[in-house]
Length: 275
Image 1 (cartoon, rainbow, N blue to C red):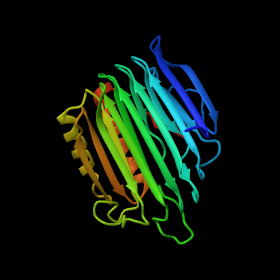
Image 2 (image 1 turned 180 degrees about the vertical axis):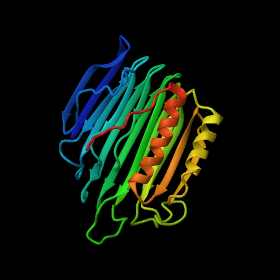
Image 3 (image 1 turned 120 degrees about the horizontal axis):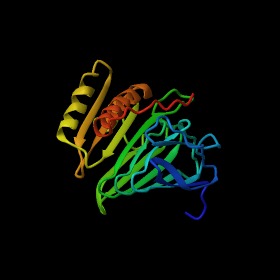
Image 4 (image 1 turned 60 degrees about the vertical axis):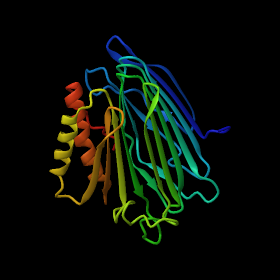
């Protein structure tokens, strides 16, 4: 891309038991808040900001993140990513992440809200050295439209590639085009309005953890949602959720997030207060 609406580069390292930034650069409509440490573990949290308030026709955003050996970081957003009508060209966000051995990165953004006639493409490319851990969540939510219909956006396309120890280990591709697909049918949203995805890759993965996650989610089935949980080709798991509210998906994700971090790191994730 020759012209970016916003650029963010963030390089992290561990220094004296604490994760700190060795390089921070942002330009245009992309910013990052000062680092926050929620506890004494040394793990840093960064809140990503879009001062423009939303993604518009033809916007282009690029983010580059790296974590050196031993670095531990949480990335989240200050608010939902709002994509407005895109009559001429799609809005695009590209994220590239590099994780060194024994690093940990969790990327937990707020939901993506696609309004009427929104056209949005997103590409995540993650390069992981063996021994690193990556946790990622994504929630797609329909925005308000004058007609009251839930599926009025043009297209949402989300592509995630994860390279583990130099080889492609995960390829996750979601494309929803309501004008060309009946997204309410089997194999799409199946009558639900919200879609959530969680991908976790780590050499700590075990069948016992997958069983615990499944049993825990199944115990929440008094609520109206559907889910699918499976192992990946590389050490890790993928979770897909269909529901009718952001809060329902966030609740399940927070439970899974807690189980993962308590089991692998003996640490309970802190709430990411934003409002």
